[in-house]
Image 1 (cartoon, rainbow, N blue to C red):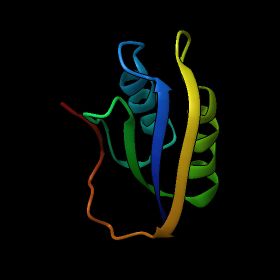
Image 2 (cartoon, rainbow, N blue to C red):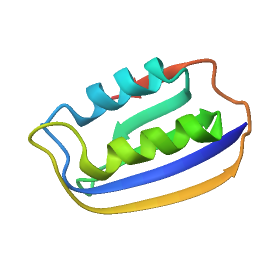
Image 3 (cartoon, rainbow, N blue to C red):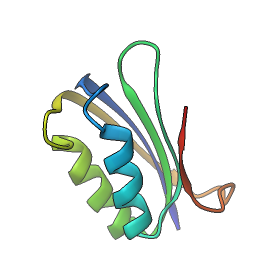
Image 4 (cartoon, rainbow, N blue to C red):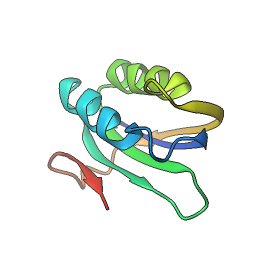
Amino acid sequence: MKRVHILVYGRVHGVLFRHNTNKIANELELAGFVRNLGDGSVEIVAEGNEEKLKKLVEFCKKGPFGARVDDLEVEFDKAKNEFSGFEIIY
């Protein structure tokens, strides 16, 4: 099990980025959360199988229709097993 911390910058608010991330993370059976940050970015923390986490990162590079991803920060680490599912934090 691995953990990934992703920060997504660009036009990522108001384009269903959190909703689509949540959907994909649940399809991939990942645990963690996605939330909007005050600076206009989106933060994602997810834990699970490393290959599935990489698929989530690939989605984040482009985002959903209407999004414009200008930059992406990705950091992998050991899983902390602190999540029971994946959720949107409002």
